Length: 96
Image (cartoon, rainbow, N blue to C red; front, side, top):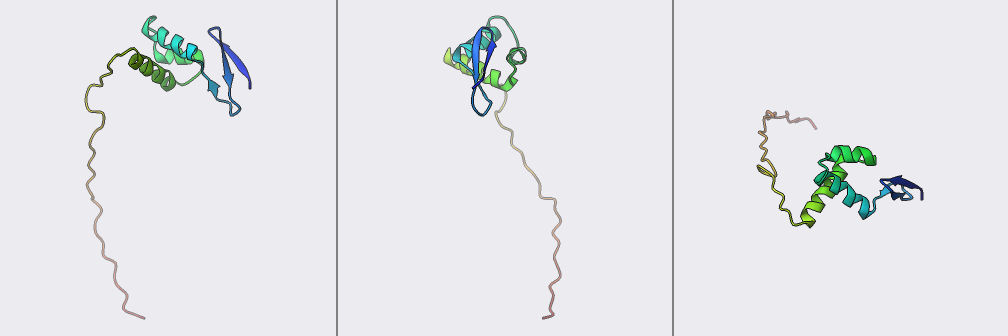
């Protein structure tokens, strides 16, 4: 396995090439979002990872601290699709 240094922490890579993020890095990332006002995108860019992963850590941190996470509006939207395909009857062959 290879190693990389970020913010003074050692990040190991698995045999498949994925980063193994220590909890200390996750806590520092969420601290930077919470206390320093950095955006998840900026933190992700520093780490060299996807913003959605950093957002996941941030949500987990907020829940761990007991914060209620509210989403305005419905979580899902109803979608209705009208069947506008015309019904076409195929001629029936009577020859054998």
